[in-house]
Each structure stands twice: as C-alpha cells, then as structure tokens.
Image (tube, rainbow, N blue to C red; front, top):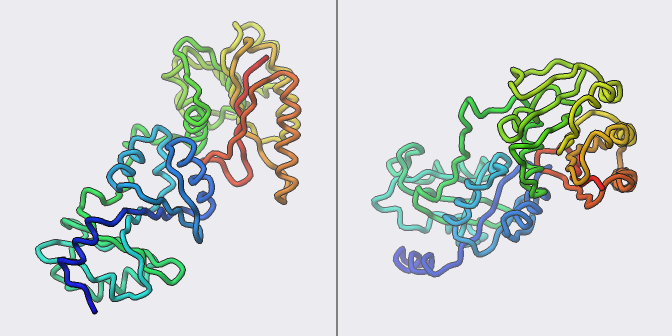
Length: 328
C-alpha cells in the first residue's frame, strides 16, 4: 500500500542522511583517502562513486567549501539521499505541493525521465526552492528531497585566483596534506619552475624564490623571485652565492633516478631541517613496477633526508606521486 505524503515526510525527518559523490573515476580512491585523512570523513566506493554514511548534508557541504586544498574541484555532483528503492515510482513519492523543484539525477536518462514525468509547473532550475536528488546505482534508486540551501554548487574561483597551470594545485595540496606551514622569512629554491604554477602559489607566502628552469615562465616574475634560465645541475655555482634555502621544491619531468641525482648535487644549498617537496614522475607501466619505482626513490632519498612521506595527491596525474621530506 502506498504511503501518504504526510507519513513519508515523517519517515524523512527520522531517517539518517547519506551522501553519494559523483567524481571522475580516476579520482575516486584518492578522494576517499583524502576525506578520511584530512576531513575525518569515512567513506566507501561503489562503482566509482563515493558513499558517505550518516552525515548531515549541511555539515558536509560546510566542510567541503571550507577545505583549504579546494577538494571540491574534483567533485562533479553531490547526491544526498534518505531512501533506496528498486521501484522508480517511489522516487516521486514526496510532498511537492507549494514547492519549486530542480532535479539532480544520474544517469542522464534518469534525469530526462524525471523531468518528463514531473508536472512542468513544479520545475524551475533557476528559482527552485527544493531539489529532488536521485542517483541509480546497482539497480537501486537512491533518493531524497531537500531545501535549496543544501544544493551543491561548485564554487567559481575569481579570475585573479585562477592559476597559470595545474601545478599550482599540486603545491597547494602538498602543503595542506603534509601539514607544511610556510614561513614569511623562508628562502625557496624551485627546480623545474616553468610554467610558474608553484611560484604563483608561493610568492606571497615566503620571503624569496629562486626559480631554476631553462624555459620561460608563463607568469609575470614576482618582485621576490629570481629566474635562473638554466638547468639545475648547471646552476650549482651560481646558487652557491646565495644564502642557504629553507625549502626546495622540485617538479621536473625526468626519471626519478635523475631527479634524485640532481637533488644530491643541491643538498648542500639547503639548511639542515629544511623541507623538500618533490614530484615523482612514474615512467613505468604496471602496478608492481610503479610501486617498485616509488620504493627505490624513497630509499635513494634516505641518505640525505628523513621523515619521508609519499602521497598520490588529487592533482597528481595517474603517473605522478608527491614526496615531502626533511633534510638530515
């Protein structure tokens, strides 16, 4: 027997909320890891979707929007839900009276069907007061009905905040995930600087940056930045003229063995207890070979560095990992 709308509403008010995140498939596992480690939100993955149990949508959105690493960039849609059903007709079993609705559904054919079945005078994607959330996974409809304030809208970065390159987000995420507190009196040595994304992030957070790369920068060189247009291994003598550095960042596109070799030539240029953030470019295919390469890179760094941490950042490509370490 079909429940009355009032009975359904009573059940809604008592039901725990759950949330499904729709993300690019290659980011699902990384985002799940990030949610747990950085935001203390446990979750599981089902069919390349992230399921979060028993969390208020308002609290989740607040945490998401306030996240300093801007992890919302990798989330396409947020589907809060209260019920699961194998019957499509149950999706429409809400009290829509006096409300203007926006439909948020997946897959696309489900959204199209809902828009066709709901009364046209109920629908308005711009002036909606409530939204119907519905996603079909494993032959089940996960659905809920919520006020507009709980609708997920991906924030837009202001034009002046848009970075020159994706690399900007690598250093942003690295400082957050590795809990690296940048100091305004630090001197930074940035290897493989072009096109300039790491400089763009660091420039207003540290005292000075020495950027080393034979390529041109795509940004206007900041006042506190010197650009040495040369390879790092050929710039040692010039770099030795400067005071020692507090942070070394490296995002060069080389075999990790070559990168570690270059860092070995530069270790005398940085202070004891100085930090490094380095991108590993994984040049091999196959899961086991990739793991071996990361392990060998970590082992090679142990001669000069300690407290070595390795993460697959959301902004890393599938063939990149990021390392943080401290000089012995």
